[in-house]
Image 1 (cartoon, rainbow, N blue to C red):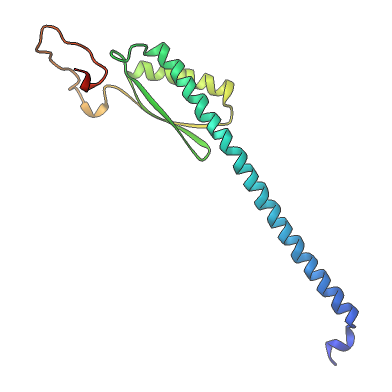
Image 2 (cartoon, rainbow, N blue to C red):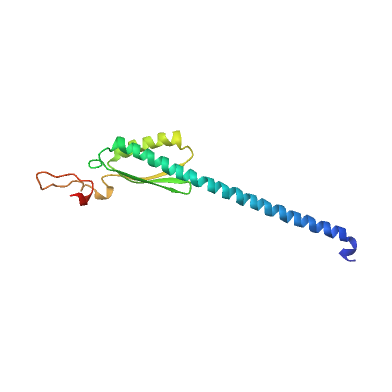
Length: 152
């Protein structure tokens, strides 16, 4: 006996409709997932820009307090946002300044940037690769302090 003898044409049409319906439902589920992820990523981009701007404003404020004169105290920190992580890179005058900046950063993130991952790659000067060679000798009676080498 053939299978066709058991199934009428109505049954075959019904099975085809059910299969098409399930394929449609699977496609719509995939579309919803894609659409949801796409909308979430588009909404996250302004949030990342906002995180970048808020961290830059925070660093400028901290710089004004910890290193108001750039000729005598070094505070050079840059912010970059990669995926869901803000990365702080640069160098500061000494370990105490780094410690104070990280303390303020922790308080700031707890207050305003809760849930944002922050990674720091900040070097406290003098750079560890210098070892004990951290002093220089001035051979003129008056040495001017300039912010850039080209200003001399």
